[in-house]
Amino acid sequence: MSNANELTLSDARDALRKGDLSATDLTMACLTAMDAGDALGAYVHKTPDMALEQARAADARLKAGGAPDLCGIPLGIKDLFCTKGVASQAASNILEGFKPEYESTVTSKLFGDGAVMLGKLNMDEFAMGSSNESSCYGPAVNPWRVDDRELTPGGSSGGSASAVAGDLCIAATGTDTGGSIRQPAAFCGIVGIKPTYGRVSRWGIIAYASSLDQAGPMTKSVRDAAIMLKSMAGHDPKDSTSAELAVPDFEAALTGDIRGKKIGLPREYRLPGLRPEIQKIWDKGAEMLRDAGAEIVDVSLPHTKYALPAYYVIAPAEASSNLARYDGVRYGHRAKLAAGDGITEMYEKSRAEGFGAEVQRRIMIGTYVLSAGFYDAYYNRARKVRALIKRDFELAFADGVDAILTPATPTPAFGLGEMHSANPVEMYLNDVFTVTLNLAGLPGVSVPVGLDADGLPLGLQLIGRPWAEGDLLNHAHVLERAAGFVSKPSKWW
Amino acid sequence: MSIDVETARRVAKLARIQVDEGDLPALAGELSNILGFMEQLNEVNVDGIEPMTSVTPMRLKRRADVVTDGNIQDLVLKNAPDAREGFFAVPKVVE
Image (cartoon, rainbow over the protein chains, first blue to last red):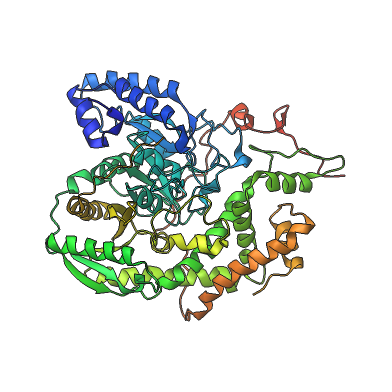
C-alpha cells in the first residue's frame, strides 16, 4: 500500500481486519503526513506518543478478532472536544494551558472502539466563525488552491476539513452550531454530517450555543460518515438533551436504492443573486437523484429568510451565558492585575485579554438581547420565529417529502483575509443554507458534487427527517455515487 | 435600534469585558449594524406562537440528587490560575 493515510475509513477498516495493514503502520503514515502538512495549519496540538500507544493496543485487539469498525483508525479531533490530559482550548487564548481532567463522551466512545487520536485540530475560536480566521493559533488553510492565494477551509471546523481533505488523518470530528461541519466540508470537497439534535452527546464538548450545538463526523466518503457516526452516537445520561434512542446501523442503511423517494427543492433557497455555478450544481444534483428514481418536488419553507437573524439572536444569547464561566478563577487565562484591582477588574481584564474580537462581539450581542427591556423584543421573538422555521420543515415532511436538497454554501472557498474588510453580517451569510437545520434540530449532510470553473469543490446539502440519519445518508450515498466526485487537491504543502 | 456609546459601555460592563473608552464608538457601530440585521424579525407575524424551548419534544430527564463523584479536589483545582490550600484564590472581594 503506497500511502495508507490516503485510505478511506472503510477501506482502512477492511485492510486492518484482513491483516493487510497494521494500525501502527497506518498511524505512522498519518503521523508522517501530519508532520509534512504543517503548512495547512490543521493540527494545533499533536499527540504522536498517545497515537502510537493507542495503535499498538488496537493491533492487539485486531489480532484477537471481533474488533469494532473504528479499531485502529487514526482520527483528528477538533480542539473543542475535551480530551483528558491533552490541551483543549477551543482555539481561544482564554483556555491557554487548559488540560481537562476528563474525556468528552464522544472521544470516550471513539477511543472505546479503538480509534487513535493523532492530535487536536484548528477551528474558529469557540466555534464562532465561518473561515477559521478567528482562531488564536492562526487560520487553517484549505488544501485546495487555484492560484497563489491561500484559501479558507471554512469554519468553524476548518482544521478538521483541511486535515481530512489533505489526507492528514483518515477522518475527523467536527461540531456544527450553524453550519460548522457542512460549510467546511463543502469548501474542502469532503463529506460532513450534522446529526439530529440529541443524537450525539454534547458532554465534554466546550459549549457555544447549547440548543444548537451538535457533533458529527467529517470524512472522505458517505460510507465513512455512516461508520463513524455509529460510534459517536447514542444516549448519554450526562447530557440531559441526549435522546434515549437506539443507534441504528447507519452503514447497513446504504442500500443505494432511493426509487420512489420524494426529494424537495425549497423555492426560498433560490436566493436573489444566487451564483449561476451554485444554481447549476444544484440543478445537476436534483437531476442525479431523479435519474436514480426519486421524485423531485417543489417545497416551500416560507420562514427561511428569517433563520439567520433568528440564529444571530439565539446563538449569541446562549453564548453569553455559556461563556460567563471564563472568569479567570477556575481555569484558563487570568490577567495580571494592577495594584488596587479587585475581582471585577480581574474578570473584565481577563476576558478582554482572553477572548478574540468575534467572541467578544457575540457575547456582547447576547448580553444585550437578554438584558432587561429587550428580552421580549429580541430573544423571545427569535424563539418564536425559530418555532415557525421548525414548523415549515414539519409541514414539508408531513407532505411526504423524504429529504430536501439545497446548496451547502452560497460560494466556493474564498481567500484568507478577503472578508476582513467586510462587516460581520456579510460573514454570517455563509451560513444561509445550513443554519435553518440547527434551528429546527434536523440532520443534514454535505456531499461534494463537483468543481466550479476554477476547479474548487462545490457541495450540496441534503436535509433529512429527525432521527432518520440512515435514510439521509442513503440519499447522500446515491448522490455521491452519481456525482462520482473523486478529485483531490494537488499537494502543494 | 441604534446603540449609542453609553449603551455600548453598559453592555460591556454587563458582559464583564473591559473595553477602552476610545474603542466604544466602533463597538457601538458594530453592535448597531448587527442589531439592524435582526430587525428583520419584526416583519414576522408571531401572534399566538409560543417561543421554542425544546429542540425535540421531550421532557428533560431528572436524576436522583446524589453525589456522583467526589474526593477529587486536586483534579478540580489543577487548572486554576491561582489555587492555595485547597481553594481557588481571587483578589479581595469584601473590604
